Image (tube, rainbow, N blue to C red):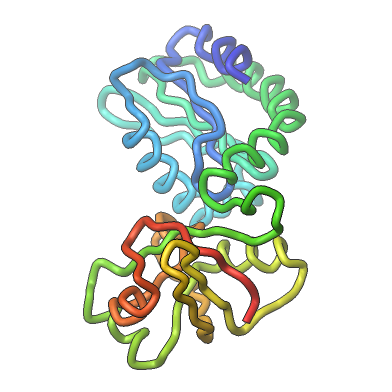
Length: 226
C-alpha cells in the first residue's frame, strides 16, 4: 500500500496522499510529517461528507478542489476514497493516468486494510463473538439528556449497518454490558441519519445511562442484540 502511495507522490506536484475507508478511518497515508494523524482524521471526515453529499462515486470520476496555493484531489473507488494534496500547478491529465492504475491495485488490497482499520473502532472480544464499541455523547448535553428521558441510546446509520452485519440480524434494542463493573442494560435504539461521522463506530448515550452503566466517553462496552 505504501509503495503505491509513494508512486503517486512521485508525480510532479503531488505533496502527499492517503486512503480513507468508508467509515472515515485512515487505511494508509504518505504525507509529510507536518500533516499529523489528527489532521488526517479530520480531513477524512470532511472528504467523506463531501463525497456523500455530491455522490461523487456515482457521478464524478475525480473531485478537484482548488485553493489559492494548492489543490485537493479526491478519487472514489469501492469502499474507499483516495485523497491527494497537490500544488496548484499539478498536471491533472498526467495524474489521472497514474490514479487509474493505482486504484486498480488499491481495490485488491482494501478488504484486508479495511478489516484491520475497523478493528480499532469495533472488534470482537478474543474470538467470543461479542462486539465492542466505544461510548460517546453529543456535545449538547441537553440533547444528549433527551435520550435518558426516552430511555434510549443512539447510533449512526453506518454503525447500525455494521452491527446488523456483525450479528447477521436486524435489531431494535441493544444490550450494553460493562465487563469492568458488571453493569448492563437493554435499551431501544434510535438510528440517526444526519449526524457527524465522528460518531460512526460508537454508541451514543445520555448522562443518565452513562451513570447507570458506570462508563465514560471513550470507554469500550460490550454490545449484543437486545
